[in-house]
Image (cartoon, rainbow, N blue to C red):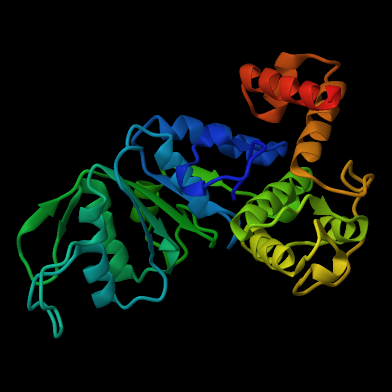
Length: 330
């Protein structure tokens, strides 16, 4: 997850930008800019650490755009030879190389009238960058083994965990940078979003529990304290792995500290107490309710301002408050 879906386990492949929630200021800026970018056909460059959720954000951008009914084709550009990259991106004709027994469509062709997401684009060789530049700029390419010019109507999204810009560092072409960065979005690492962490954990627990056919209601105090203090060097990808393993190891309905398999756990200094640490269990519903109530208190009960701070619409906030009221009245 790049951000947290509002109050439910979900299928990330169908999520739109409106399905995500964050209380982190930097993530709110990223989402608001993404919503603007989604309404255009400009190329988008997504920056962020490995595991921060760049692919999920790219898919949500696609689902939120006018191309949402078209194909979303994802391709990781790292660690491929130029020849293999040509074949993967642009396709090849029968007989183009040994073992090419039939014509094969490339990613650009498969993404026609949809979105092509090129992950780890900064790892491409200079020769590969040159070929991508033409395809991105003009929508033109040639299949390997053919001189016939092909065209594809494709919106290109790219991502990298490297720091790249238009100044040029000898590794990434300046002209390609300027062509792919119609909008640049930066996804902050999970360690910089402590306010989001309780709800991210709750949503991931709900999703893993549903997938594994279990009824996990949350974390005990020790487990919650440890997860909230952990620095998450692998970001959301690591969190998802840790939670899935913890759910698998749990025999009851609450995840305990002994169920947590954390790598590089150096026991960092504890963070300030959060609403989740004040309770014994950490359920998704409770985490959401506490956070909404806290934000409302901070803005003096102003629902319009609270909705803006939460990154949701006023109608969504009203619906959530009705749900909280119903639970409280039971």
